[in-house]
Image: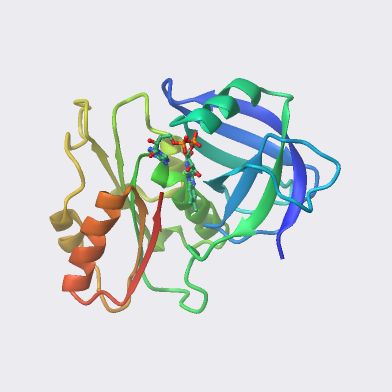
Length: 231
Ligand SMILES: Cc1cc2nc3c(=O)[nH]c(=O)nc-3n(C[C@H](O)[C@H](O)[C@H](O)COP(=O)(O)OP(=O)(O)OC[C@H]3O[C@@H](n4cnc5c(N)ncnc54)[C@H](O)[C@@H]3O)c2cc1C
């Protein structure tokens, strides 16, 4: 069952003008699985029997004893614009969580985990990285992360601190950065990485075209375990 909790903004980090990373402290420390998402509303009332207007956001951190929650939000329309204006350090919002089935494999504790993310689609992958790190299983993780430019690299520091260097594959689509391919992720990047398509788990998080492209290719090689989170 989901819980509803008021949450205070502890800090806000900007990743360019359109992406912000929020560190929130909910009043209730409620357990959630890595990869879950929540509903965030700016409306504060006494009774939430009728849940107000809200937006969905992936939780970009693993559950922790101190209960903090990280979110990565791109400003795309009116509601996210309002979030950018109102959610400053010390301000509060209300969260309803946790939801979703974009979760780490429950029974398999050894198969490779391949995450393919574009832009803010990295959010649930950060949650996976932190969770696998807590379990000492970060070596199972391979991350293929494409971002626009140097400014818009939310979560890259977290990934660099957790994911073994050869397993972190960065792609920058709109800027030349030394040592990083200046292009999108393409299927051969995944196909030539030595995965066993029967046992590895593939997590794809990005826009519609991005998701469709990798799902189609994974299906063509009869990949068994493919999970998507598309916004
Ligand atoms: C399960 C789930 C998890 C999500 N997690 C995140 C997350 O971690 N971070 C995050 O930033 N968003 C996430 N989203 C998307 C988020 O819930 C909102 O849909 C989005 O922020 C729309 O905001 P808005 O109301 O300001 O824009 P709207 O007013 O609804 O849309 C304005 C314009 O932007 C377009 N648009 C809507 N959503 C997007 C988008 N995501 N990217 C690009 N263009 C868009 C619309 O087509 C429209 O033209 C998630 C969605 C789902 C379903």
